[in-house]
Image (cartoon, rainbow, N blue to C red; front, side, top):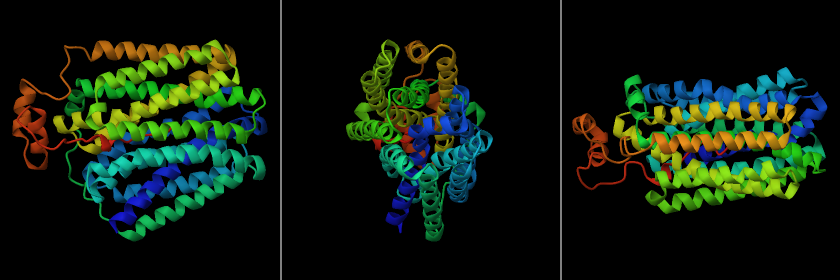
Length: 429
């Protein structure tokens, strides 16, 4: 039963990533049929992030306190209904409402769903397949959506996705797998503030900010520019599918590197590569330059996403914060950037042009990198050692978290409380 549960959960994560990215290659079709402005296109791409921003932290807290099974199943049904609504939408308000509803389910799945997966399928190591599943969805979603839309229309891939969500959710409900996360450590505001002073959390948050802003800008601007150059929806979908393959490969390699990859220098290097690659869009809007930029930034994002969650989760273990709260906090940060990225890029492209929009995105990512270097300097608490009052707090931890807390405080060997395979997050956006 555990194996079937894992397969269904990974399938639900895959379907969610596929549905999230399926909108990207067909956005020019929506823009033509519904007469969408650049701002409206940005709102549609940012709707998932907007809804996720609202639900991530509450969903994580509720999962830590009451268990994750029921709200995860509700998220699956909500995504099914929202995808069906998107297939039937004939106006911008209806389409925007459907994307908001999908984003709410998406945010709950990527928060409470991961908690259920860890609790019912053998601990944090079970989360290793979540990033890979999302990577496969990121490949399949744009490719299938672009091809089916080109030959059968906009509604067909959405109807298929809605049916897939309903079937997978029904399968999960039938398994009756328990979720024993209820009663785990709640996220006290003081604990969250303490985690915010940790190097690992600072680095993870900066990685998510950079990945989220660049994802939103590229998802909006690259399809529009390729469409202007004469590319069809199917061709645009294949381009994003190729980038998705790079994401999946980069995530797998980063996970295979283990703890050696879960460091602040790796985060800084990924941010630097991503920021530099965005300059290609500033210098040229030629199709080849945009495709190279998309592939390089996607590969860099795969490293940032894979490393960011173990960094934040290590801090959560050390600070006594529940897993749901840590995942929800990081997802909330991603959601904010997923909203701002496409909105800002859409406005900039509409008034200043595509090249200027890429330039502004690059400047924002460079600023995030600079802030990270300053904020995570020597004055901050180290990522793997707690001294002073934090050391005393670590000594007082009892129960299952004691070994991890003592190890984080430097009390001797033991298993890594947050292995690299814990990496999770919105391949997505």
